[in-house]
Length: 238
Image 1 (tube, rainbow, N blue to C red):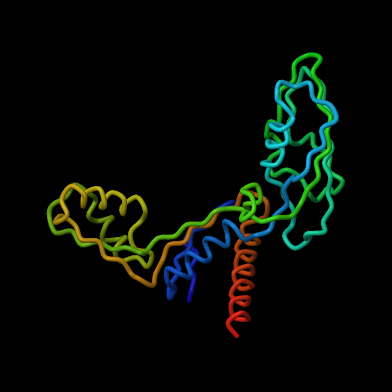
Image 2 (image 1 turned 120 degrees about the vertical axis):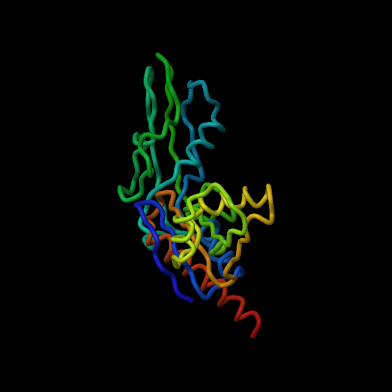
């Protein structure tokens, strides 16, 4: 199996994967979404809350704040606590959470926790736990998706950029998402207009991080977790 990087920015990347199959691609997708361990707020102790939001709602909002931490520096025994104390009138942001470990912090400090008016207060502690999205979505580190590599054969006159179609047809990555969706719409109206052909062992893979870890770490972590699961299956079979 070979992977070629097609595009990348700080939070996401698109790859051309050759020599794979649907089972492997879906296993990696699920590993990215569900199996990568991250940190999230699990237990919240609210000592004072006169805000317009009840305690359970505050705890739920805190749990869904993605936390940034370097992958490999934490485990199930990691102990990190956030404290928060605020008084209105003010908007309480995630950046106001004070961590006992400066390396663990919210991905986006401008996430709003609650708005307080004059006289309202909130005071709490929140304990962090390592987990996986198989248990709860708050531990999800990112997302991944894949599709086959497609090429097209136009059989009737259609209102599309034929030069662009030819360029994409001859590229290693095949049709772009935009061209593929356009041709599928045309095909729905008249199936005889265009023929779409796919490579059964070639895929376009998209991976995006939510910021809990950098993109490279997310891909490596998902690969590590997938290998661990395969090794467990191998041990069970033997």
